[in-house]
Amino acid sequence: MKAIDAAVFGALAIALCGGCQTVADRAAKKRGMHYEQLRELAASTKVDPSDGISEVEAFRIGLNRFRTYRTACGMPSLPKEAAGYWHITIYFGLAGLPVEQVTIRKSDGVITVTDLRLR
Image (cartoon, rainbow, N blue to C red; front, side):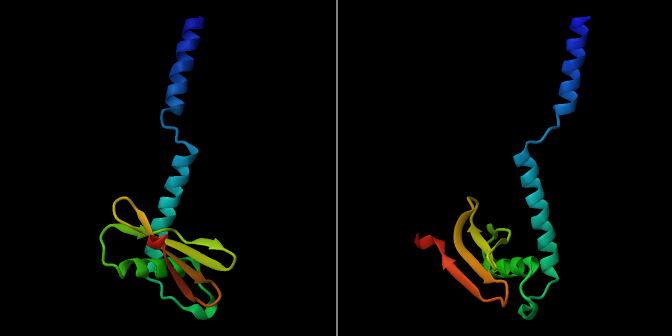
């Protein structure tokens, strides 16, 4: 009887945990879905600083900044909110090397670009 219980338990454990994802896997999937959602919204969004800069508008600014380089590899990061600003890192190449930090003041859209290659 114990052998059968162990076998059933083993099969059940494999069935239940075979498709388990780690917390990191779920977080990465959630970020990817959010990134795609922002990309779709940014495509139809015009930046209007008169009412402050939203996350979608900040992402649009980051995408436009990335596109000025006319490179096929790389991407802007998701906007990170901190103390009245949006921060976006621009990455280049297959390795995703950070090349710029774009800081956008939320209240009026003033943009500051820091070159990360000089560090």
